[in-house]
Length: 365
Image 1 (cartoon, rainbow, N blue to C red):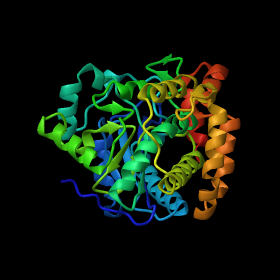
Image 2 (cartoon, rainbow, N blue to C red):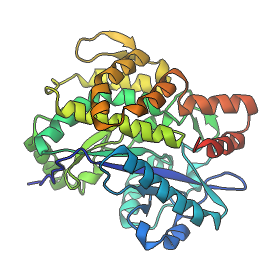
Image 3 (cartoon, rainbow, N blue to C red):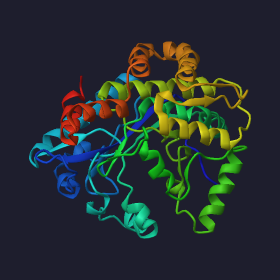
């Protein structure tokens, strides 16, 4: 039996996977094992190692609203920035470094990561991507399943708004989120199946553990998953938006959407081929993709589907006091995402270093 630690309020927890880049050559810098011992005890639960040493993860504490998230992330980033100055290193917020080579990265000295990499082989060596994970508190296990099922319909729209990984190992991939395709190469990753109820999720997880396919729920690398230990639903589909304000706005949207879905009628099962097609459109074309409404099979643009999403969540955002973040979301929708901005910067300069420098300079604007 898997206990779900209920969260009566729609609390928020955010995980950000960050690139560590050398200030001089702007390549990925394998130094997390040096950096982590310098972290103050106050931040020991907020700054952690990741799969490779050129990445570092920051986690918020449990936050009750978006303003708390904003202050929490900024405080942790400021502390990390101060440490990184000693190593002539900076943080870059995109989901793929534009020219770093996978085989040059060092695997973190961690038993779980080494086990994973031994299994993944070449797939793992290419997996040098970073993501944004958002946990929203859910009041009971059955609501967690209801929300998990319904969120699958909206995951491609969240991905479209956050795309920031067009380049890989010095090439334009032609996609807005190549991270998505790298991630889908992992076992048990991607769009999850429909879950009938909590008992269905329990049985599935226990069977997978019993068969030795997973060690724990953490090995279910789904785009969205219930997290029993935290009492949350964890949304994992997003690339990392390229500015601080965009990160916060996407988190606000996710919280608003989850609360909206808690109070909505359960969504019926949807054919996973439609969900995967919509996700492909988001990863390949970003905001210019085509979206098929899984409920009525109506074809519309991803932009129009996102406009409908904004209308759906607006009353909830208003009740949560986070309606002000809609203006930044609309700025992304009618302006550009991180992938579009990176391509524009590269087209102007033909220089990936210029792209990274500009992104770092503009992160807090």
